[in-house]
Image 1 (cartoon, protein in one colour):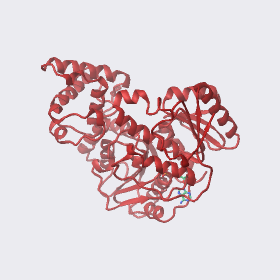
Image 2 (cartoon, helix red, strand yellow):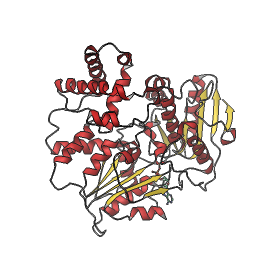
Image 3 (tube, protein in one colour):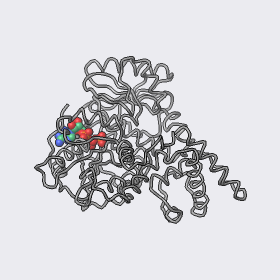
Length: 463
Ligand SMILES: Nc1ncnc2c1ncn2[C@@H]1O[C@H](COP(=O)(O)OP(=O)(O)OP(=O)(O)O)[C@@H](O)[C@H]1O
């Protein structure tokens, strides 16, 4: 595996001036990651005008390992980190990370619950306080992710996403009180931050920080899933004569609808679009495009419609089963056979589903957020659709695409049907576009309504 030579617009983006904000939106497989790596390398090369110390931000550790594997020699002078590593390191350098100041995620719910109870006790009874606790958890998270720091900002903010759980403006002051109570209670038990508001802490710290910046240039891969607060923090991390280059694909946004680069205030002179899909065969790309035209994508800004790729290959296969045990055995058997000569990934909606395949396929690599070493070539990887983000395999198998499991019932319970459909639809898109040449979809019972109905897009068989 090697980095491709940039062509056309890719080349222009790699050599854009080393100053200001640049935004590159591309379809799946259009070379965003490859060009992010090359741009970071160029920005760190002494001979390039305006060059300087460069940081490449990846979405998680796995993508960092993957990128280092792809391009270790090219990235010799570039620091590769995911956002939280960068944020913790910076806050540490400012003396703001003493002790263990980040609230463990398993303590979050209990503190939110106490905050709701305390605020409810101060108000006349109202059905608002009877909403599921997940609603309040999500709302507090949203406020942090968007860097909203005053009740006035909250009241005037336009609240995208969470269609089934939208909060009328008149209730926002009460919600704000719950958020303030949560922060007070969190501070009382010794935690200055939670995972979501650490980005706001970085923004605030940079606002007070007149020291020279450590990095002159920052390049962001998979930027669509960074929150606006994270992007704002990164934009403050570079000096005014430095640069920030954002690469992203809104069709692959799987961690909430955040309109990231726009709401983070990035100010690019123009937006660059990558429309060529270099990864998928024509047949796989056809299915991916049909998925991106499903109603759950309606109204999506910044969606880049791909040009048709040239490579031929078999149509995706959709296999129906009547028993789940048979579906699982079929997937295991196919993965074993195909992996003798090719890289195969089994990507599932949940971790529990992925664990079942991992247990049946000892020796398979498990894709987790913290995979530290990457290897290429024939073999099987198992993991969730989330963990397949940014990666590619010769063969991708997507099991459990039944109506009963996709969108996942827990997602429907937490986020409501519309949002669960929108998120799982994007997960399906991410899964489909990971496949270079072969795509196998399986389900038990009724197939998911998230798949396009057009039967000419895949070959349907019974297992
Ligand atoms: N100009 C090119 N010529 C040939 N192959 C290319 C070119 N650009 C990218 N590729 C190949 O296309 C594949 C996808 O590239 P890459 O992973 O960088 O895309 P991406 O836009 O980041 O994809 P995604 O967002 O779906 O993860 C890789 O195998 C890469 O080597």
